[in-house]
Length: 113
Length: 110
Image (cartoon, rainbow over all chains, first blue to last red; front, top):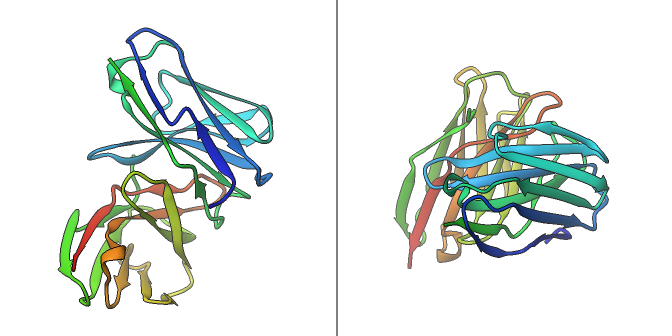
């Protein structure tokens, strides 16, 4: 597996609480991505980063913010978690875009009660 | 919105049979990639085919791309129980993130 870790791997939280998920890579890849995976929806892009402090929105960015202060770390924050954000969250990395392969982390299962 | 749409949504076959899954997309692409996801794990890249290619092989995998029909197919020959997984196509166009489909769930019965 590419050197990607996600933490925590599982989290249960309550509606209205803030939650931060962390993605850490040891590959020095430029691009990092956050996806959510839900039954019937497949994999949907939340936000991505193309460099330190450079981020852009994906298809389902509402309710999420991200930060990347170091090449190796990409944080996903739910400012005030809602039950609709219950999902499995995957981080991915790639050297570039276009033809570059994405490498995925193991995922974080988040439950918002 | 999703670019690739896999078909069928689910497929169940016997070990040793071939498995074929299809991906259709809507807009121009410069490459199409297939990924596999084992239950509870992250996606793993299988193969990439560029828009100027028609067919590509990798081991027991064969991918075709028909840009005129905006479709691709993934064939897994002589399937094994270990091939049981979900398979996703992802389309790449220009300098934008890949767009993934919803996936095909493949069950290979021993």
